[in-house]
Image 1 (cartoon, helix red, strand yellow):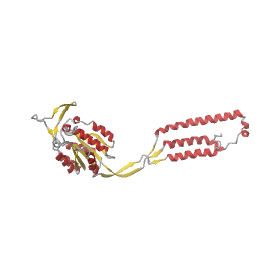
Image 2: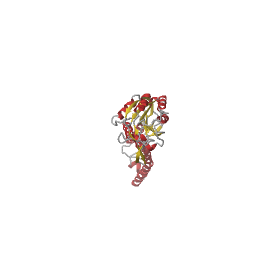
Image 3: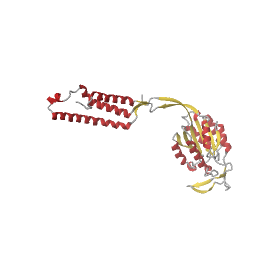
Length: 335
């Protein structure tokens, strides 16, 4: 059985016991001196009321009563109670495309900013799902483990930029492999990925990414960011706009959202495709898609406040002080 204390800092109250003992001893010595001053000891039996033998135990009762009162305040608990509950929980990895094409401004203020806002607003609608973050371009990296700390997640999201990845491109397979590693301790029925991308600069590994997702029991909800008409891709150096991406002929490249590729990834893994350009509706649609096939998992919970024992210590303390009250009508130590 696992025992622990509820209020550790109240252990300092135990320091009151030696102080109380010193006070009682000094008080009793002072009282005896007063009696000696008042009359010689041979006259005490005549002048003073005869003492009960039980009163000799009053100092010990006071100390024990105070000790058990302190124990009740400290609150001894046992934390061995385990409760199994069935809960519908998702483990969701937000897979965010940070390739340079996400700087395109066909969605104001940019595709990347839209995607980040979608992630934050979706998490704000979550309750107990665990979330993690993978960013990818030509390579992928996990920047946050699975957690229910949505405030910390928002801090991570706000720091994401397209220059977070040195190798550019859009390699879905690399991103999926990173997600698989994060899901290694998660039941297959509870593995969900929210892919936020424009689908541009696809490395041609989307079929391999789909195959891996299906093998690992991962359901992908793909969220398309950007317009079908497209927009130029800004190029920044140290935060300064240096121009727009151009092809080998010097022509400005127009980046377009690849809706078909994103739809295929979502539907092929048992998920769906969502248009992420509508910031008002998309978060609710993402939540709905995630909950559509939520997995019921049996969770073992250790209760930290299940069994309190302060009431027993308090009862003993009250009983001891009650004894003093009953056998000491003068409310004195009488020793």
